[in-house]
Amino acid sequence: MSTADIPTRTPSLRFSTRRDWAARQVIGYLMQQAVENPRCLSLAAGLVDEATLPVAETRQAFARLFAGEGRARTALQYGTTPGAESVRKVFLKNLARLEGRAVAELGISPDRLVLTTGSQQLLSIVGEVLIDPGDICIVGGPTYFVFLGTLHGLGAEIVSIPTDEHGLRMDLLDEALARIDDEGRLDRVKLIYLVDYYANPSGMSLSEERRREVVEIAHRWSRGHRIFILEDAAYRELRYDGPALPSVWSFDEEKETVILAQTFSKSFAPGLRTGFGVVPESLLKPVCDRKSNEDFGSSNFNQNLIAAVIEQGLYEPHVEMVCDAYRAKRDAMVAAAERYFADIPGASWLVPDGGLYVWMSLPESLDTSFEGPLFARATRIDQVMYVPGDLCFGGPPAERPRHHMRLSFGVQSPEGIDEGMRRLASAVRAVNGTP
Ligand code: PMP
Picture 1: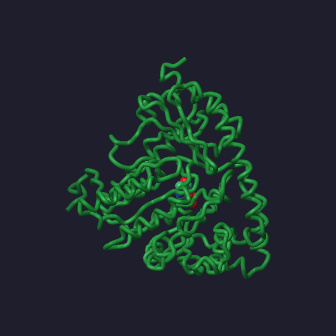
Picture 2 (picture 1 turned 90 degrees about the horizontal axis):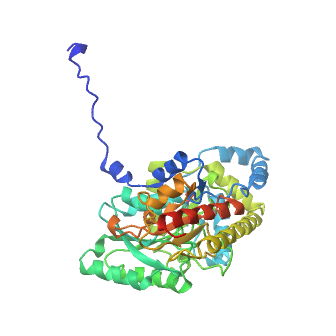
Picture 3 (picture 1 turned 45 degrees about the vertical axis):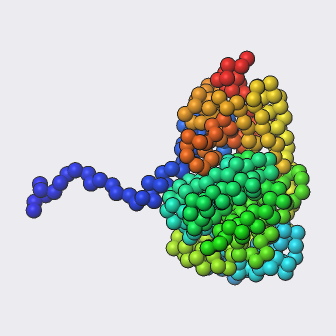
């Protein structure tokens, strides 16, 4: 065959089904919107506050880590899939502090910790090891939209349960499980996903009573197989008011139902991409096997660095300082909501005790989605960006509420927050036809 016989047509591309499912994530599109509208003041970005990032603390911990050759060399070497035991011990001690218990009272050893690349990696791995296409994951409505993308990427069926100011409605969770059971599909339910501290996007926390109840419900419906709870505690340490709530994990006496996902991204530095999971014994090997396929261990160096921060007593004061800064920003956003939105009919918002988000609702007639008039007006004319609320709901698109917005007070200064809220209210008035 001569070269003249070789077909010149570009061969078609054939991707996996999972690649097509992954295309349903929206985080990429949202980031693109930010890039395409650079003059926009962003109330959308879920990034943490740049000004309070722990530069001095990280420098100090780094100096300590590199003070001796041995520890430095260990940190620069590959680690193990779940992470170094010395680091896991430090993280477990820190977890015990959050739980208000001694390490010995937790009922687990450091072996139950798997250190991950942010908590996102744990969420993804848990999905991978539990969910086959068509399996059911129960989530709150609204919930963390990146995890919805993860679930779409696995071909999962997402069942969305309404939430209120006390978190996911347990009566409706129970009803949904009964309905799925009636349909003969209980065997497809693998996971209940909860963002239970100052949730992304609603800012609300699961009440203590419901924390106990959700474990009880998962146990009761785990008839043929275990239904796991994935407790995503990403914002746990960003607490500005109110009591420190016990984890859902703490109500799971056998420690076999709840997977607790923790991260240092919000409380310390997301750039270090360090999180960890507290994993039931029965899931340890599956999670580590899957993680070995991905990376056989997250950044050993970053994990050691954070352990040094904690050991030197630099962590707690930093978290306290960060909380003071965010509390002021939360207050600025709530004050601005009152200033600019109070007289917009049908506008309401939830005041969070922690986290980074205010969830705002508008009249149902006002479409806040990417395709609706408000997003276009806000980004192109008033130069302000928010996260459309419909992205945070699972279930069929037609059934997703389209009149909410997630507003973040993480990135902007208090003055920027006030200006952003003023612009947003102006966009709402223009679209709504209110003066
Ligand atoms: N869960 C929630 C609810 C989040 O908002 C985030 C970050 N936006 C994560 C998990 C993942 O964060 P990381 O991977 O940085 O720990």
